[in-house]
Image (cartoon, rainbow, N blue to C red; front, side):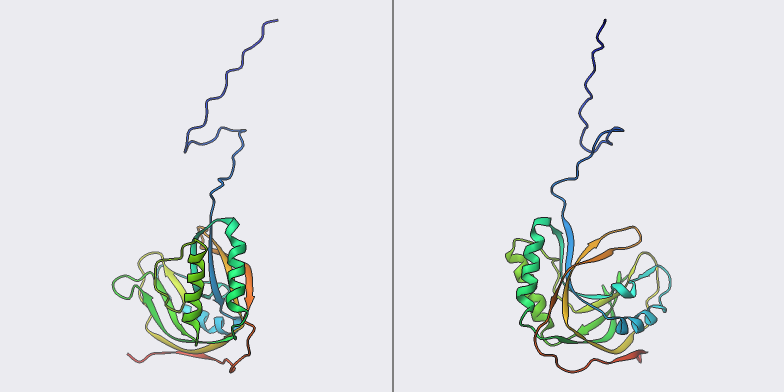
Length: 220
């Protein structure tokens, strides 16, 4: 009986589409997009969502359940570093009191020319200090954060094409933030998907009570 000699398959070149029936292996250097944030509660997100109704054109509003204030953004985190980030969050928040957040007027990034982001400004005692401590701790772990100074804000919408600006709005909204969250961001064509990796309770004593008032248009 004549034996049929099998011809070996040529190796798959980098960037080439694998042949049918071959197994693909996930790259070992895959990284995660993570950020520390204060989530906006539902009672505050509702009037912000009402303000988003004024958007026209190619603005993409942030879903009310995804509204947040970013403290530190990490664009590329190796999976084995996630536990270190959890320990960092615990260490920096365990003795910190809940923060009374206030939302004020709207603005744009960049303010000149064609803006890409529409946001509302935020403020709270100790907010900048916490953001700076998180960033310092992240750098000490050998990880990188976005190379931008911290500006406390809640993003309301991102622009995906030509779109008019919304007239300036002012808010008198507030809430008492009792937790910091570490969140994973997964990009999709329809927008990012956020999944909470861990939460860190602010264990100090509470101060003051938040209130929420609907926005009013600012006098030019």
